[in-house]
Length: 419
Image (cartoon, rainbow, N blue to C red; front, side, top):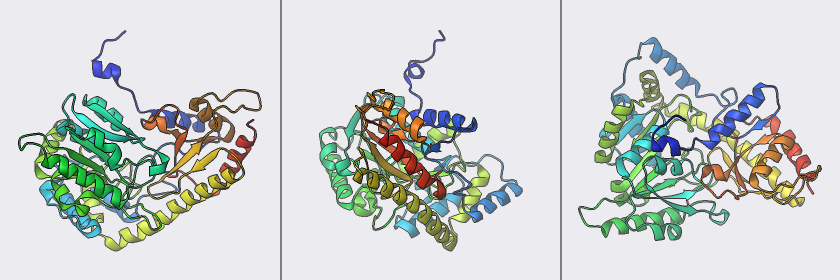
């Protein structure tokens, strides 16, 4: 057996990617599957903005193919600063902005910047990848089991028992995997608690920082509003690091341009670590995004059409699930608030298939829904929740409108066959 590091031996790969890849292979072989697993887009359904695409092509034609600066080109950092000021009222200087190839390297670098072995990291479950980043940095997992009653978001009350001496609090709103948001009141309460904790620490002690992942903040629906710690509590500026980018805002997951925004001293350390990782956004894409972020009218047009299409899919599937629930089937869903995700419940353990096979656990339920209804969705245990959680993430980034009715009909047929 090949000997590798203890970290490599203990690391668990992404269950979401593993599941998504397996489904993709089955589709390639001709199987009809409604693949709602990966938080990505079918670019034939949700293309990136036409203007952004053209700017990328022009940037390559202008030979922007060399190494970018370690913190990102000045044009892009300036554009990000202006974009955040215009859209959120957040005022940050260029030296408080770090560019990278999407959100992942920024999150990992932030963890490496702040978390020492044994440091307490607080995060709710289900949530995207926090459990893996804590493992990578050998932090102490302080997990909060979030519930449907709170839209699967952590509350100040649930955070409070872990906060003393903690190093990092991870918040994501709108949240992956749930598509739900933190309310203004909840976020204010959390911010007040963080500020009180930091005020009570000795001047030379490590502070408690908040990683505020707002990658989906442009994608809210109906009356839902996005709130951030710094706007609600300006004193949080000293302790908040935003994770943001174009991946979900413009259906540009493969373009790989993201940014972190926060205190200059923290951003400088992140820059130093990233300079060794080399996880830069490509030079041409940086130039293109810098140009596109200044196109206010084009962005508004794109977001209006894009959000309408996403909201239609989310609401149509939500209403379909609720209609099945009214018929007596053991399913449920949380009304969509934001992002590209719908939180769906499949409470089917203990039921039997028409062949008499018992669905004895959630793995069996997931397999049954896939085999009989041809629907692939991700169980919440892939996001750190308990193995017996009967809640799932359904992503609509690859969903075609014409597939919604037959997909729901197939689900009802599969449910009706259970005893």
